[in-house]
Length: 62
Image (cartoon, rainbow, N blue to C red; front, side, top):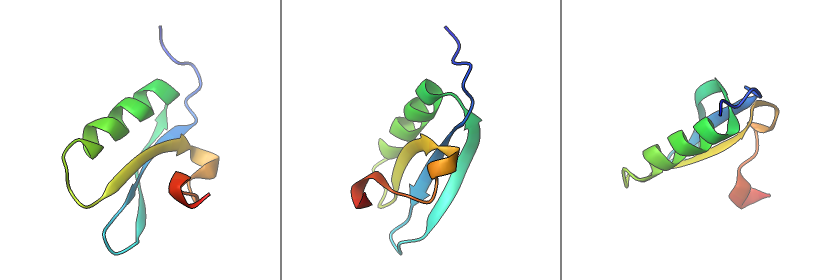
């Protein structure tokens, strides 16, 4: 089933503390799947899915 709510994005936190939007206009499931895919690469960066409106926050910092 397609996720009709396309208000999710994937964010990246690099090893210098900089935050970047990786991709926008995703459904929740697609955003979470993409974040897991990037996170599984094992680099120093952290990836997470969040609503586009909440892109300025990181789950670990809330």
